[in-house]
Length: 126
Picture 1: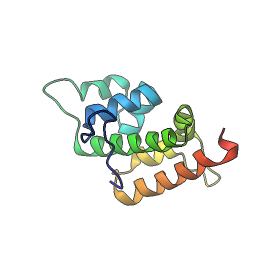
Picture 2: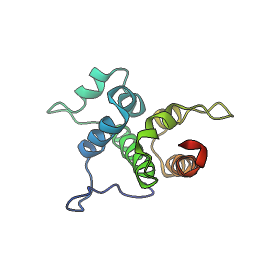
Picture 3: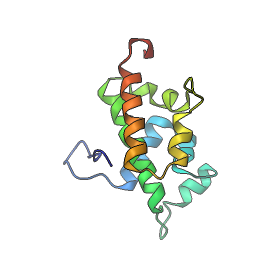
Picture 4: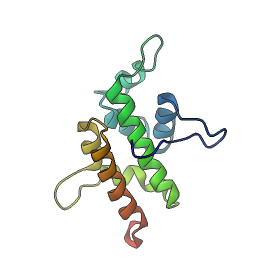
């Protein structure tokens, strides 16, 4: 990952549960389940039911989604994160779909973060 998402209190490295909670709070259950790669919200929630845990790709996608949320938070536009993830760019890419189909690798995440930063800081975004 390009940056670790840390919990605001205590400065510890965030867990997959922290990432999921942040994303559900900001993006909603349906969008969070979608970017994580789940077929449904029920499937997404089952990944967090004991004794199962989310797989590696799910953890990476959720960490990337949490980083995207933090980009919007830094720009003081957290409420726009979900809209940006759903928006189609001129080339036909939808960030949520790009994240869902990615492996959460550094190259993909970096491109999404740079695009999110540019969009969240543009005057037209607000």
